[in-house]
Length: 444
Image (tube, rainbow, N blue to C red; front, side, top):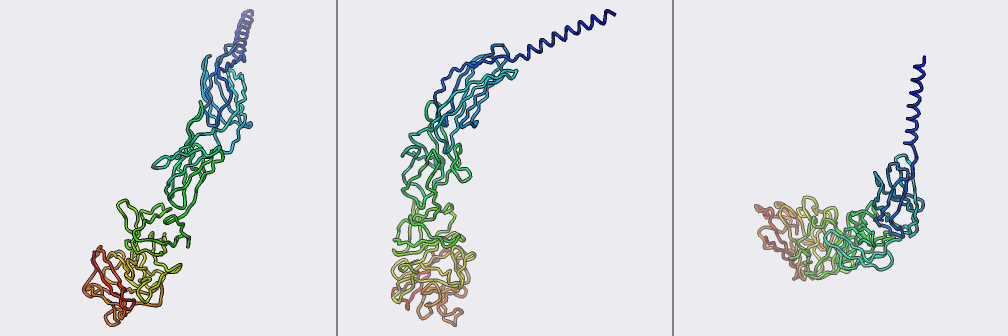
């Protein structure tokens, strides 16, 4: 019976030894932090560098070193470093940069933990200040603009800009631990850390100022407008804007605010492009109303007399209008004038008492059937009959009421057609008065 007692004693000894080992392994240890960086102050946007010596007096293996930054008792940044063995470890903790955060004192906490979850923590007060950058850079799609400091946290770039400037803003690195910060467009507002283009816009291209505030992120300008020659167009409805201007022959016409202007149809009677692609006004000097038609993507140009649409005078001055079938801008298929007087086309006054319209067969005019006429106004009233209009054209005839067209209506001579794709210029000469009009038709 002694043998079982001996066995029990042996087992009891083993259990006691194991318990001692487990107690030894579970010893809490004593992590030690030896900070080798002096934390005096920092700037918002810094990557704050630090070096820390770590050890454990009880020789318990270490686990992690955590650097945590608190601002107004809120954890705003954290860096975790694995500490496999005793020694010096270096790292960085980012000091966030946000809008409308005042200068103040943050709390930096260093926490060293060993494998038994024993933690040693040290705390440092860290004064924080917003950088006062000497300048900023506006990075646009095709160039960069320097934004000069105009006051605390305020910056401006003043130069010749297009009406729309898409770009983001970046800062230089500031101080010993600073980073290059960016400000871009997120959810219809300026946001730090983004490089999405900020949609700056002005009413017109030319000399104006773009501004930005690095404290509250206020930026300007954001003017959504359409303008011609720096004059903002008035809204008629959602798809129609217009402006009245005094224009000279061959004057450059600058159109601003249209994202897809290259897709718009440009009326050759009113605009030509020079070698640089600039639009030049073609009619004679005078007052004109320019209407942007977003439905058909073209600019309607109409002559004015003061603030009103011009009308034809007895001496042939004023304006001549077209109403009728088989013609339309920018295409007869999509925007035929017909007998809708609101769509009447104003002929371009290319000289005193001489008016012109340029058409392309199959596009802005029907190639085989027309039935339009000249009017004295944009609407019913005075109109040309065969008694007041003649032509020597063998392609276009003037109706007399018995030749297939009403008096004054134009038609294509029987057996003739306009050549599809060809350009024709209709010129109405009223130098002898509005009752002695002469029509010429020239194929270009």
